[in-house]
Length: 85
Image (cartoon, rainbow, N blue to C red; front, side):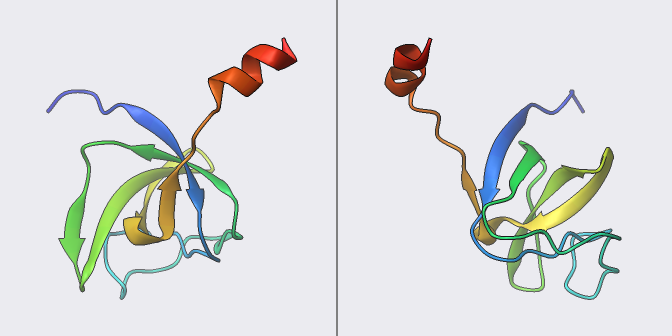
């Protein structure tokens, strides 16, 4: 398996980060994260369990899991960024 690409996502609600891709899995320490939190996800790691699509995330330097339906891709407006430069 090749190296996963990372992308920035935003939590749409208070979100539990889990040790494994399962609702029954232990919740990671310092979780949940708040609505609007920036989460780095590893693309191509999606898996389904317990009625959710899970994606692997970087949480405090460790690979953990989050339900993807509570995450949205972060969109950077290049026009706004170029005006700020």
